[in-house]
Image 1 (tube, rainbow, N blue to C red):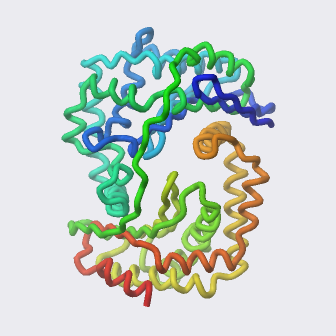
Image 2: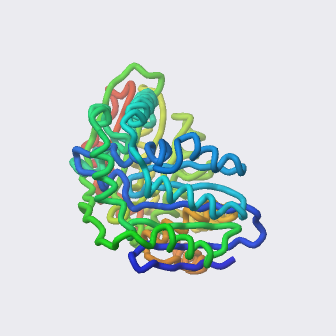
Length: 419
C-alpha cells in the first residue's frame, strides 16, 4: 500500500492510497467548511448546502445523480461536521472515473432550484424535529453550546429552524463563494485507485478554479458553563466536558488514551465503578474530541433522577483518583485498544479515505502510520496521570436534561474537583 499526495497549482489537494487486494474504491471531496465557518446569520447553511448537493446540477437531475452511482452498484452520501463537509462515493475500481465525475458535478454545477430548496427545507426541518425528540442529541448540542459560548463552534450544525426557514438560493450561492475555494477542497481516494489517473482527472475537473486565500475563521475559546432543563423523561441525561488539547497538540494521544482507560469500554474505570459496582446507570462513557484549536474531554451517562447526584459526584471523584493511581496495566490496555482501533479501521477503504483527508486537512501531509504508532507508544502511565491531574484545573462545562432538578450545580462539582 502506498500513499501519494499532489497539489494542483490552484491549491486543490489530492491524496490517494492504492490497496492492491481490493476491487472497490472509496473516494470523495472533503471541504474544510463546516458549522464553525458560518456567521451567526448563516447557522445551519453548511448542512443545508450538503443536502442540496444531491438535488440537481446543470447536467443531472436528483434522480440521475442517484441512478448514475446505483446503476453500477455504488453508494453515494455526504455529511457535515463542525469543521468539514464531505461528499463521497463507494464504487468498483472500474467506476472510479464515474464516481469522481458525479462528485465534481454536484460541487461545481449545482442549480439550487428554488422548488428543490423548498422540498429539502421541509426534510431538514423534519431532521431538526427528530433531533429535538432525541434527548442525547439535544444534551450534546447544549454541551457544545456552553463549552464554547457565543462562538460559531458552539452552535448546532443543523441550525435553528427559524434560520433554516429563511435560507434562499442567494444564501447558498454566497456560502459556496465564501468557503468552497480550491484550497479548501481535498480529494481523497483509497482502494482500487490509480493515483496518476485521479490527478489527471482532478486537473481536468478542478484545475480551472481560480486560486484564492482561505477565508479566516474565529479561534475557539473554551468558556465552560452550565445548562440544564427539567423535563418529564424516563432518564436524566448527564454530560460534562473539560477542556482538552487540540488535534495538533502531541498531548492529544495522551488525552485519547486517558479517555479509553477512564471510560472507553467495559473494563474502563467509569464502567466498572459506576455501572458494574454500583448499578447507577446503563450507559456511561468518556471520549476525547478535538478541533483545530481546542479540544474536549467529554463524559456522558444516562441514569435516574434519584441517582444522578451520586453518579455526578462519583465521576468527579474518579477523575481526581486517576491522577494518583492510574495503573500501568490500564494504560497498556488503552494503548492496545487505540492501536487496534486504528489498524482495524484501516482495513476499510472508506475509513482510509476519510483518514487521509483529515490528516491532509490537519498537517497538509500524511504522517506515516509508524509515526502515529510511535506517538501512541510514547504515552506512559506518568503522562496519563499528569493529564488527569491537569483536568482537575481545566475549565468545565455541563449540560443536563430530564429529571435533573436535584442534580448538583456546576459550581459544586468544580469545587469538588479542585478540593
